[in-house]
Image (tube, rainbow, N blue to C red; front, top):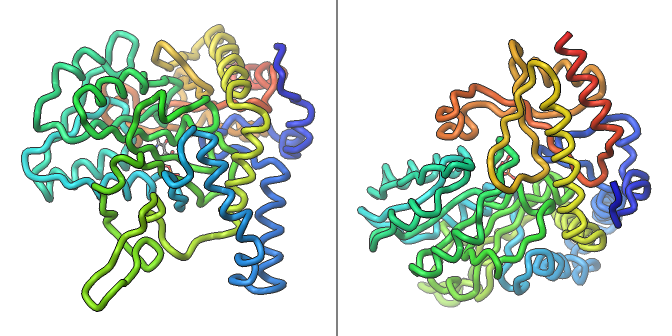
Length: 394
Ligand SMILES: Cc1ncc(COP(=O)(O)O)c(C=O)c1O
């Protein structure tokens, strides 16, 4: 499969590819060497000269992380907050919205559990109503129904770009056009799409976007970021403020920061933050367009090959599909398949009912095997993977 990406080099930078078939990139992708080095070097520096002193010394590089992320999703650096994970990014955005009784939230069938739990909590505590838009015939959010459900009470459209349990890519840009037309705040969970798809917040039209570092971006665990559109920043007061997010300006007053970093907190894992910045730069050097193309092609080959195996059902929905491939194996649970593949040095994940309950229940599924490929995976690995799945069946 021709690709402008130097796969040999990418694999050299990823030594674990010699030992493992890592098809769990939607869980946590393998960090490339420069990312690992950025984290370890900074930890060493902290041990050698002190944590605060190390941060001072590396101030420029730490600051540069915002420029890198801004370049990645095509926004301004002041619109980025770096936080611990995608959930914290999403929560900080969601809980800053001024909901009142009777307000409505529109979401999709494959919304992630943590997000939906937050909807239910706000419904319980503040009397907000949750409306789940059905899927269309392709299994993605039904845009016509979304339009029909909009009224003056709708205060938020919140959807997941790529669900945790499938290759589906929701039509985030079309949703953005609808949200914009009706002037409704649009929060996009891009946890599974950032790093594998070439994203632009301008093209998507979202006001808020949450992402994680460890998945397709290949960053360290415990990193994530939030995008907040400048034009809505002033309307949002984060649920938690500290002396980094705001300044105590007089005895009875505080002033929030004027940028998205009002959603951050002061103490953070600086080494991991530098690792995240390095991971973003690494992805930008390869090119997100190149990554997207390669990931989609590899996943499409994997789906076709799995589809030919007796007793295997590929479960992905959507018109556009990404690097996540989900399937079921007759008479075996996803956990059993995952364990059996692990014996062969193959990493996959098992998605269970409670991660995306509405979607799983509507499809009558209890679980799914999730094999997620990245650009550094190969056709040879797909062949090996399918042979291992076939062997499980025999
Ligand atoms: C769609 C989606 N949103 C959010 C999250 C949460 O991300 P994090 O674990 O970084 O908080 C996940 C994690 O799998 C996810 O799949």
